[in-house]
Image (cartoon, rainbow, N blue to C red):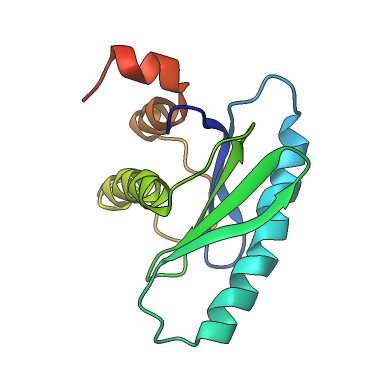
Length: 150
């Protein structure tokens, strides 16, 4: 994933309410990514509805592309949706790279939900400092990622 720049990571609750939206872009306003996240909910609902409730694959792949952005989706078994917006100049994005990225985000989310102090009502935004730091680490530029690898 060397030419790929993450612009936004969004976590959307099962009632299509935003739990966490992080804008990594300096050129686009936050409102644009809120719009993209909500538009993605419709596409995810269409795909999941067409595949049926027994669909085993949680990775939904490329949802749509707009301008210079590619929007990818993932849904958990509890119907929480993850949306990643990428800026793709002329790179080919491998599904395996995207699945890895979504697994990392899902692991961070699971750690948050397993916290006994986290309110599971699914309507409030996630404000945990540890969660925010972990998402920031995932979304930072690939150049920084090469310097500090886990």
